[in-house]
Image 1: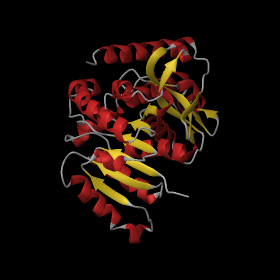
Image 2: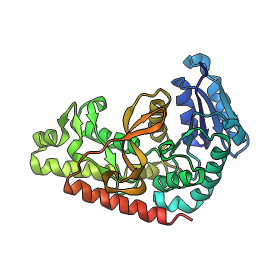
Image 3: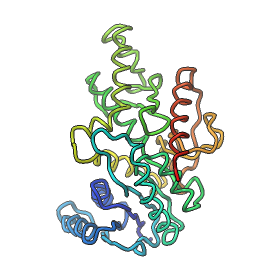
Image 4: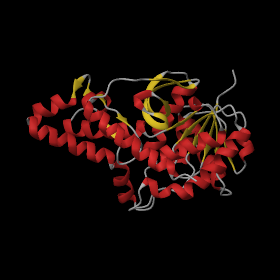
Length: 316
């Protein structure tokens, strides 16, 4: 059986971590593409030479030519400028649109049968642009944001309650911006509602305040990292989150992961890419999981979708 092939577009911080994670998990052979000569070649040589230490055996190639992504099963796109302190994800739209346009054309030409996972910001707009230019079916062009946003939300809950992060389930919906929708009602620790546990710990009023603070921190979590780093944005966590999605696709795991998907009526949204829970398997998005939102959640979702629509309308 031929090994799977994963191509990574963008050899920056996220691209390097993606390549290392693909190798460590032996997900398949990996190609790292970047326009900067020597950068992807150097990173991949570095990762390849530690194979005997970390006990992985896959082919790793750095390249400046799109031709090398031929035959890819999955392509993960990180290309674009990262955020700097004081910038919103939306501030990046003009420069990253130009980058995404050439990336999408390269993928369309050389990896026409691949499934694309976009990480580049502003996420919802970049996925939309990538799909438009490639013309790939909607189920094969998706975005990573919800896995990361949900992981951040779950981390804050675990730290607050003093429990293992492994036992917290939490999910965010909507756009990957300041109007994302952390689902408070569905957050749980091994099935026990987090709201109940916070109430036990602090009483009803204070428990509610603590949850509101965690929701606010989740929405601004990317900016919190940017402000601390000062020279870029998060890279370990987005890379790991995209790998969870890629692994579910490559191994046909059918995991239910929050994914930036094209909606055609689901959650009352038509014709836009928005974060929702989806089943990811060998065909990409195989099913969108719908459930009923209460009035508060729906209002937050509507606000988030409105922000996505506004962002997408600025695409040239």
